[in-house]
Image 1 (spheres, rainbow, N blue to C red):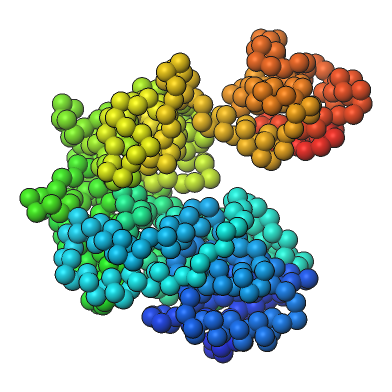
Image 2 (cartoon, one colour; image 1 turned 90 degrees about the vertical axis):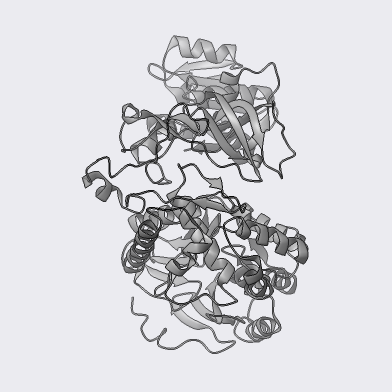
Length: 608
């Protein structure tokens, strides 16, 4: 695909520049560098699909009016995709939806962040951000110009619409003659959306990847304590592995290009370089994140970017000290000592060839008897669960919105095995403490938490970190449990029952009186599906390989069972349903079981 002519110079205001069949490029103005955000328009045959709305400003509204009255006037705008919540992307979404009647498409987390930011008053927003940066060593007096300039730009948003659509990763959008799939992108923003066409190799990536500069990855107050830089690096490296080198990249800023792999390699190399500077500077003495700012760039941060630059330094500090004790100095500033090694930003192959030695620890270990230490099962090398080792690590820092839980039981799920092996869809950097779900007792709560209190029995779903004596979890992922529920039962509840419930009720749209076939009914997902379907008033047919498993399924609500090793499943289902078939098939098995379920179907099959 030759796009050299299309990108030789930028589109004029109100112009649509053709990039490929049914794919067009336009630009919207910004009042700060880089002074524009890209907008992409996809021809959806009976209408347009637009990606990005731009910042809420008179200039942006003027350009949109030029587009709507000009090249877009021939048919309606049906859908508006906003990749993430930053105001240069979502700012004018509310206005544009009101003007065109388009359906807004964003992820739940991104819409929630935008909504919350709009809902906070200007004074409250400024105070919250000032305190967050002050705790990391920033001089509040120096922050004032940034709060008036760069930070205030985040608030340039029109009121958001009350309704939106939130597609899951992998959701297919049929657009004209092409199909684009939703890609979830993390780090730069918590759950940004990208669109990728496997057939035409076109990737609309928002701010995740840029051809010349390095996208900003910072930890502002709304992501306090989160390792956003690790999330970002994991995301871009997964993209490099999944997408071909000849992909046409449509970024949020700068020109469309076909340099995907080169751009990612350059971005990762930059982060390694900055990591090295920090390690050299902080090797022998504590240093605050604010004091790392000169290491971020040779150019001093101006009023528009100062706070964002400090937030980037905090992201580096958080990544490098995730497993290390931190304490406030006497001035109340949070200081952290960088880990004395360079493994943090290396690829798996580089880690595997780097010898272990006392000078190359993957954790800053503390004495087992220390009150600031906990024991955890640590994955330091990808492979089978037997690779896990019991280690002593530092306690995690409690943030204002998080909860510290003393773990009494942790669930073990198949995704945990995949994470340890390095074959899960989300690649997590090493070393890591696996464990998706747990149950225990709350021992400490952050200042902003009012949903639980110390002493509460709870379950939690942090998706990582549960194979330890205690875990720090965002309060939104913590739920009180009744006294009658054991810790072991609670710890094995969220993922299994959440998955089965989503399959049956959300995707399968199960109704009272339906008939359900559950394949693999003897496993955790299958047995949970049997219970949920029974509780919903459905007739359950359970397929399992052994008499013992079938007996368990009957005790948990199945009306009939099938031995799929000796019986013809579709024939048996036809017999049990008088030839009608089942309304829903739940199939966590695949293979022959899926084929049999499909032949037994009169409604919906849900498989994964």
